[in-house]
Image 1 (cartoon, helix red, strand yellow):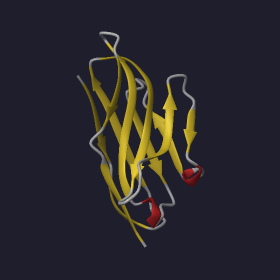
Image 2: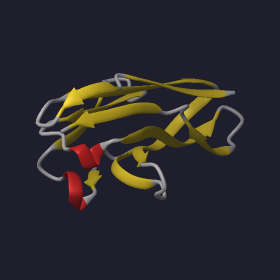
Image 3: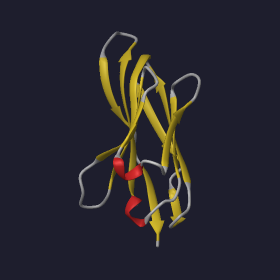
Image 4: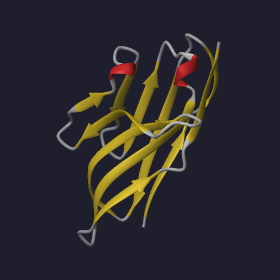
Length: 120
């Protein structure tokens, strides 16, 4: 069984910063990629930023220059540093991982989500 546990959401004023964390644990052999998605009320879930196993990153255009994704040395925890937050960044932020389990099964796993609210 695989778990993704997110933390770090909250309420912040426009222009402020938050740092989200997502820790993966469980029956993991290799993590292929870990991404951050978000879903605002009435909207579809969208990719915010991602990390592949080779260390490359990608960002949605709407966060470039403001958000930074990083990970720990064990590559099981990813962080999302969010600066210059805007009210339109308000959403539930989800961590996603595509990984290979110890029994060599490819699994997609989602965290429970963490609320980020940016007030104007």
